[in-house]
Length: 245
Image 1 (cartoon, rainbow, N blue to C red):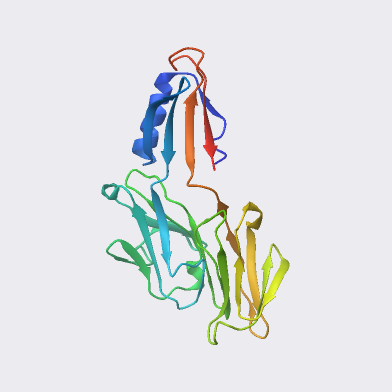
Image 2: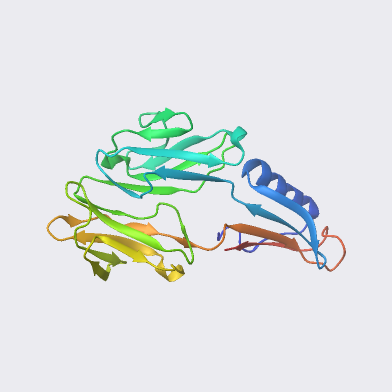
């Protein structure tokens, strides 16, 4: 991410502080002190993610939705929070949702539940954020709620609330018509970064769905941090952190 790229430190002591913050506050997995051509580096990968079931970023008013936080370190504990137009950082069970084991269930979702959802551990770090849209209308676009990998095929479904989901539909990206499909399904094959954007659909006689953003990503986010090797140690050398996608 932008906040990582180009960050610089000038001491090995500072590097140790970064590792501590990363491992104990951000709850990333850390591999440190490997050597390649004189460089010392460590690798960070995200270990927690918020999942949504059914897997969609849009829902009809009255749908059942279950959210759960999957973590490699289950001892960290987690709290599901959200930001909506009617409240900030409210946790599951505090006026919305019901805890059920490791999940948070919303038995009857309503438009005011639209917003951004995420998980926090006891130390405060967050998982990926998920944007959910709830409509009182009659059409939704079922699209991936999590980022999709480059090269994968992605299927979008234009769905009505009261009629079969195989009605002819028109699909739009960033406000422009992509294509019309007779079955209400559209598959984007071998997605690339150029397929990122704001998608919606329309079913004649029923209406238009809200818009949802689709994110396309490369391999799992890895942050490679390394020291230049003017000397055999990193103590006095400039260290730069890069985000690799």
